[in-house]
Image 1 (tube, rainbow, N blue to C red):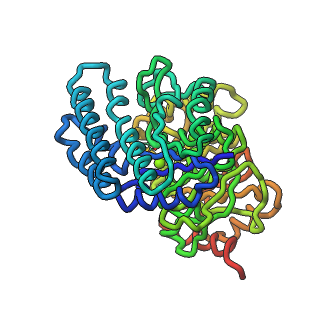
Image 2 (cartoon, rainbow, N blue to C red; image 1 turned 120 degrees about the horizontal axis):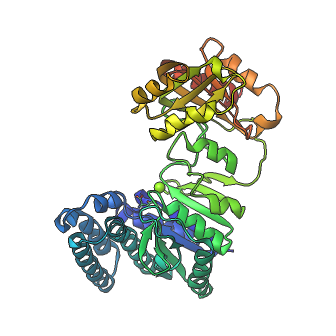
Image 3 (cartoon, rainbow, N blue to C red; image 1 turned 90 degrees about the horizontal axis):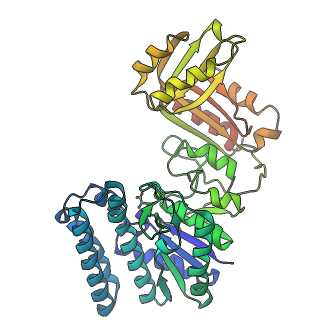
Length: 438
Ligand code: ASP
Ligand code: MG
């Protein structure tokens, strides 16, 4: 069974990074790798911001530099010719009056097209037989340009027919992440960060043994290392635990992007390109309880909490609908929610629409707002089964005022809000309590 190896933009930032990727792929050579790569770091942003071709000179120069440094002269010449053709196409697109979003996808797709073409050549140069496969022939999507949804049946069938023959001939397929095409062959993209999604889709289509997400951190840590320097890498997480943690750091996989892996019970490993020998974190279907029962103490600052109290809530229906409609109208994401008979408390990351929201909520009840809050989330499948953990959490920080306590429906987390100023102290004490041998 093959493995998918996905490398993010920082893993292909420059020639040294490309060489490192080649070394990592060489080590997995026997595992039949399928390589998926993001655009070189910063390239997607530059392509999105480009208004004229001159503003992209630095982007082209970075690709040229890698080609000259790592490829044979004949390979480099061929790639530079391709780069020129791409520049001409982008130039034409920038001047064309076509419909905006599809135009944007057409332009931005060149980031992944170039990085994957270049990586295939670099692998070949290093003696690893590799072939560039156009991801747009594998990932078939609807027409929702800039955040297209894959059509699963078509994507699975196409990925199999494009990739299996390459694998069978002992060659490593190299694809750009993030990009796809409609059934008519028009280029689309899966939304920012979409390369992880490509990795999960291809992994699911081919029933791979493992999907590896290579990035620049050592897996998922037991706490934020900026707050807790002794934080350790978590060896294993369940899909559910990883989903709970996703809110607390962009470094953890977005649950949506690994959905195809979850549905097919394919483990996802988060690996560090800078420390490839370390096992990273394996996210999988197993719901094993860690010996320490909890897996991580995550937190987030800059949170606002809102409380709405109203006697009208008691025994009335439709109240919660009205309340959430207010947030809906103002396109404001609500994170943690708790309710009692006569009050609702919730947390928001983005409080920019709050004045308008509060004005409307005041029609429903008494509203109080607290800024400068932090959310702490204690995560672990063990919470589901082991009694007394929540008590241990709260007694560890018994002198800190806790609000908005919630235990998600999945029962694998306890989440609560505290004052932002005390978050470092609270997280450190909790980490000591649950992760340090005494
Ligand atoms: N290059 C795309 C982005 O920057 C996709 C990805 O890297 O996952 O969003
Ligand atoms: Mg990413």
